[in-house]
Length: 147
Image (tube, one colour):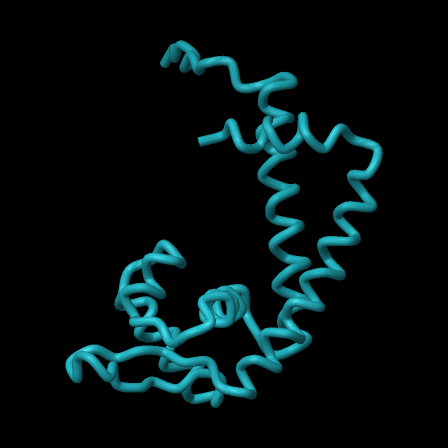
């Protein structure tokens, strides 16, 4: 049986290398962040949620948390449940609407978020050192252009 080869679009060269370099670079940064945060007992999701609560400076509804973290409310409900079980967040009733639940960061949550921020800063400093010879503005604009 005589088969003709399947023709595929060009999938080689510098464009492919650039694409995979971006993917691998992002994966490496993510792995470093996850490892650093694991060292203080957090995941990136938990650190993100705590950071949003700390930066808000007040209890947030679960819907507000979902909006700020750009995820669906059911994910936030589960995440807040895990944070609450660890004593990092408390669910409180909204004084204006008893049907609404708000998430409030606890003292332990503030301390853990601060430890996470220090761990993230170390990763960030290492990344900055690695990229110090690059034109930061050009790199930032190039990455921002990817949508």
